[in-house]
Length: 373
Image (cartoon, rainbow, N blue to C red; front, side, top):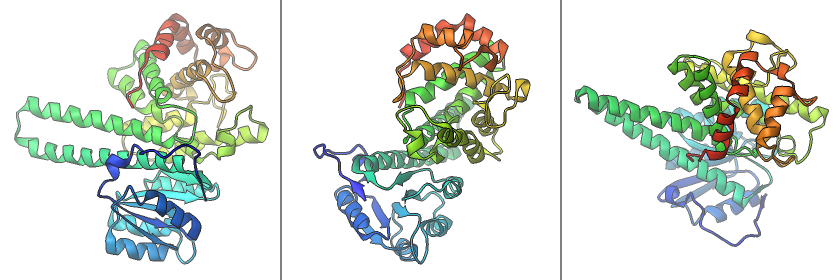
């Protein structure tokens, strides 16, 4: 079901992207199906509905809808099998999945299909609008990137300087798309786009100060925003809990490192390989007391050791539903001296020494950074 907001009606941000688009809602719950259609009728040029995956597939093959909103568990044909067949026709098909239960295996299967947008029942109208905004903006960016790619293909005959400028444009666009994916993946969490981007900025600064090559430092900035992408597989009652986690809840939360690593595993692109290592290692500790594998020292990737300290600092000085933010001074003291829970032994000594020397730079990044999206 949809929980209606008590606020007055408003025009959602995604309207400018949804003009002239068609949608298909596939949901076996007739009340939810019709309620969702009624809410979205004013924003799409045409909406069809179906009560099972087989009927939804048939409608799609006739109409080729721009957006699909589908339940996972349905009779006759489930939503995943339906979308798998649809993706054979259109690999870039926009899809939002609805589910009434947390099934990590199915979530991982969907993510590996390139789908990262989910709504958990019951959801609010505002949550539906937020996810729609992210999906439609990402699709707009994808179409824009295809346009630039076509321009590049036509630019083979251009002079070297003009071609270089076009290549830089595509690189910038690709970086932004990864950032937007990171934000979209974390839309269920209290983390913000500012936090995600700051982690990359801290990480790039540390890598450069350690004397790493420019290409490595830039890769850290690119890959670091994906460090917590595995949180997409953590249940809301754990992820959004306004208070300390109990032992069982913390064990569930720890799975986000493994889920993120599984999502990013196996890429042939070095930057994504680095993102995989960061997702897997950013909660490991230098003394071996971290998770998920309890490895220590240089068995932890350098980028994992870098982001570990950066993430600790930013989390301490940021506000959270379960805690007030630390002052910069308190965060500095906690990291460099320990407080019983955090210890200097948790961090690579070289990276800790660099933080101690340049703590003011971390503070400046946190207080002055303006998010790009």
